[in-house]
Image 1 (cartoon, rainbow, N blue to C red):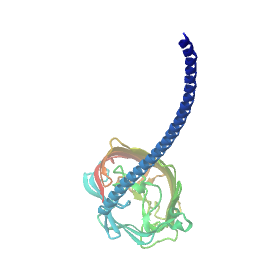
Image 2: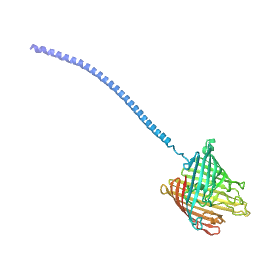
Image 3: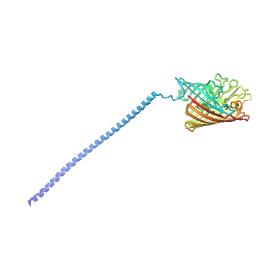
Image 4: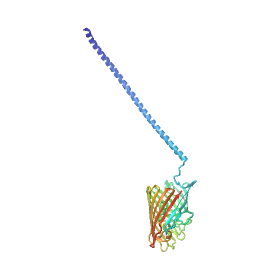
Length: 443
């Protein structure tokens, strides 16, 4: 029984030693484990930092590669464009028509067709005619100075075939550069169209949507000096010219003055106002004015007069939209002479014209025009030479037409025009209706 009693204290001692040693070992293991965990955390932090740096480097490399690819593609595009421009040089942006002899550009335009009027009209026998034929020469002279010339081979208003002088002038451009406003001042000297109204700017066959013109149809050629330019929405043109038809002399010292001011408040909207005086013209030597009106010239009414003149004013407006336009003009012409029983005539005129494309190249157009001469009337030829010397108080024309424009250089069109009027004697003007078909071209 002594052995168990001895074992009991000894066992207690062993158990105490075991727990003491275990506690010491546990404390040492915990410290070691904590240190290892801290080291792992530090390594993980360093690895994450390295990974972030590597990602930034990869992103930067990706951007550089993308930039190099874009640069390479742009270089290839530029190289192809340069190669194409060397192989096929682009055409000049202006004046694509015509052909060149060095720096001289030669172009032309014309029109031919069939014209048929009623018995009182100009073409009662369905004439096949060459309506227009012109050649143009354009050449630089020196810096911003240019030469422009027009040879008129055939014009509808002429009664014979022949070579006539059209426009011919020297033009100095960009004179406004002296005060840093290039477009504000340009000049012409020579023979050019009278800058009154706007219909003369599109009366050639290739530019005219119809075949006929308005009844007033104001235009004319005359030698003189012209200044023109533009500033923002405003434009202007003013000219001093001889006033009579001769290009070799002026038979009176009084000059013709004409001008126009334009205003474009929007790209699709245009207004202008024009004024003109023919100046005193010699009845004996000039006999007619240079300006064309009503399919004839202003002519003296009284043979006892020594000089005569006409004063004119006109307002124009135009609105454009995709596939069409409308134009309107309203004007006045006053005739005077110095005959003892002084003759004076007040003449009012207007026209309205519209065009609408019904297909990309196919259009329909119409124009209504009218002239009224108060009092004793005024000789208005219109479409009928037989009425040339007979004073007319009222005349109107309705033109209806269709056209097919292949491109800027070729146009086919057809028209029927109704025309009636009244003479100062009270008699009617009729039998003047016109049917016409025409091909217009330019090169």
